[in-house]
Length: 133
Image 1: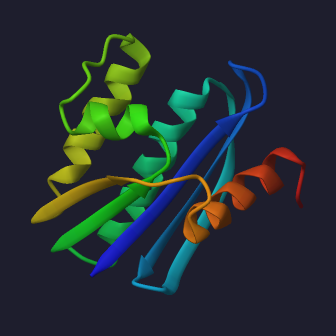
Image 2: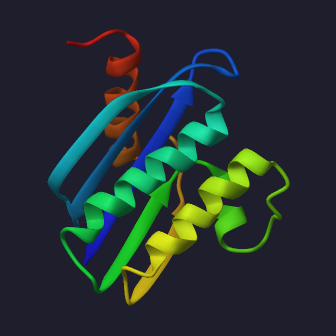
Image 3: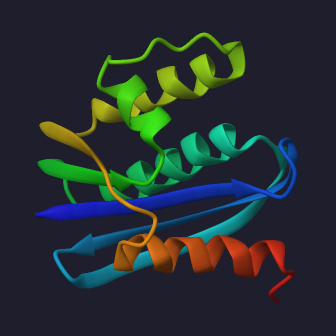
């Protein structure tokens, strides 16, 4: 079973933003990614992180993937519990919908930001924003 963890953040809302994403097979990390994404809101960064995680996961499986996020808004929008009103978020939401076609089954799970894998992706994006070279 393949899992992704993703996180996006900005300093200021909007402000300088970065993403962190990882793909894992249960507890074994297969691949990690982080990058600065310019000026963005927290929610835009969360979506962009998920998009990167899905792109990475599609290199590992076409079967089932479970996407783990600490953004309740993004998870509830993807599960159809919240509507997407913001036009910029809608574009990213639709991009996620398109990427879902790469998999037989996809699940979205909301977890605490204190989840051990969420801590890893949070650290990745913060290293980017702190100017890691």
